[in-house]
Image 1: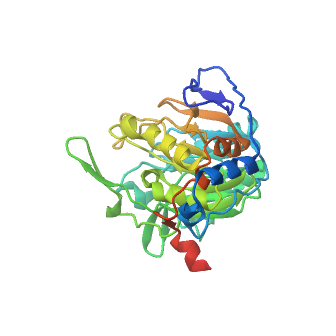
Image 2: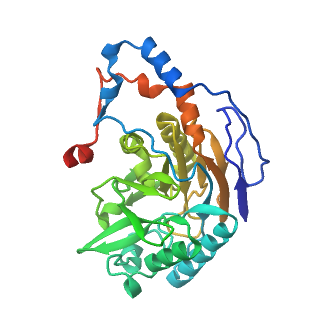
Image 3: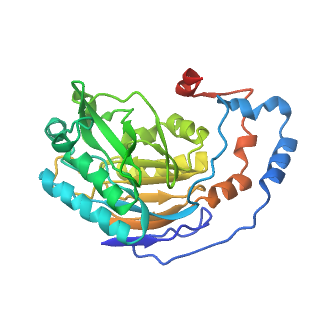
Length: 350
């Protein structure tokens, strides 16, 4: 099953594009950014100090190498057969690239079952590479051969005696551009519904991850990371165009929060958010919600799918970021005199 949609300039109340929906487009008039800034400055007293609401100050949105391109979200079925999963993922990536995708995103834990028992068995030594990391090697090779940017979902990583839930990002040359280890571990207990503790086997990552790629600046989170708005705000302040969250929400929290959190992160930070989940397997020990989605900078759902295996092909148009920020000039209206987001990592590197 394959989904296709174009990036739209839709407002919040416009119909979403799904696998079966038709294409839609709505244009807006644009005002010069300088004029918007002047209007906002005139409306807000200088004592508000909006530039101080981010410490260090927020970076300017960089000019991306591509302003418009096709994104693919590969919602894959996952089995206990690792070799099959690797071959299956490769086939999906190749098909997406054949459909014109310049950026391909894979799901969380796509090379084996999502369980504490399976993480050690399916883990790979990414630094060693080769036979010690067949999933990693495949992603590097296919990114290079297809000349695409690949956000490789996540796989269990073994390093220094620890296990991590790790997302690898590859450039179109096949080289590793960045590696994100899941910062916020999925430890929850909803009585009678679901109990899971990643911390039984996994170690939390220690670093936010922002990567400059051929398709713009991308901030990376994994699943539970999406619940922590501070991380998304930090990525926005670092000039990210797009946030990618490979994830596997479950049948309890998925219906309630999956789309809600994506739209919130996009609307709050006025950028694109893409999520990619495994397809649902009702017989698995952990049943994923599915519903991989692309959300635009007004919080509008641009493209989504249901729970079956599917690949979404959707268009991202970064010009919408500037347009939305002109409509709602939040960066000039923050109250730096009252609150501040501190980027500890950036401060420490200065």
